[in-house]
Image 1 (cartoon, rainbow, N blue to C red):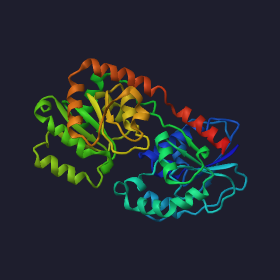
Image 2: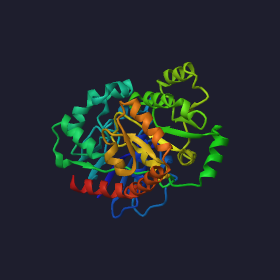
Image 3: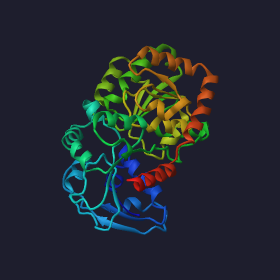
Image 4: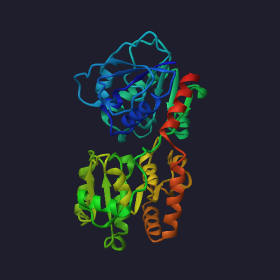
Length: 372
């Protein structure tokens, strides 16, 4: 099969869910022969760290564009496909499809959050998604999505043939694994100046991630937690950060609720490993990779009981209603005070994580290509 792949998310958007998905899929799909691959990319540098492959690879250059922001850039580059492709895959929700359709088109539609919670995505992406999604669905010959929940959500919204929607789950990277706890704490202390045990959240700052719920659940237990556990909120500080920080400062939590900002991938496994528990009470997820990464590191997880999260984490997490601050705070205390439950969740979490791999994702993607 002659496979074409839009690599711009892998080149420009790494560090985000879509960028990491694109990169890991390319990394794990290229070794499969006897396929040949046509990579449409603004540069080849993103692939330099990957291993060598026997599969034939042809690069097609796409200009970088002059606009600011990932979504503007991928939408502004109109490019032509090679005429000898058997299939072409656009992994960033269909934004930036080629201008000529010479073969079946596959779109990874990760979720439909702009339709469900439009206030939680950027104005640019929200506007673009609403304007283009119906044309994208018309152009697509097949859709790949990342959970059965997302598939059913897409089917509720669009009259698309169910047999042409394929679920390929994501996976944690192999770098996420149990690491010596003392070493992890030592590195985190030196890098982030965190000396206490801590409750951890890693992810975006969009309102759908429920950082308000995380902070208020911690605050509710403050007198019982303050002498031992801090709350660490890690991730690139989004536009809501100022509101969270003002609340923390105004409620005398400044020394206890710590915002690390963006954390380089090299430190993330240690940050997970050194945490006493990982908290993820998100309102909506198409997949939800951070709690799976935490489980891969042997960290017990409390997660929301809605959307795709229970599908992904199975019996490896303790579940909460993300709208119920009392329940979240109670489960935090219960887990921290119950070592047997911690060990049970660690064991189940590691087992659940072992059922996912990027190689499996690549195999299932190739099977989808073949059916499409």
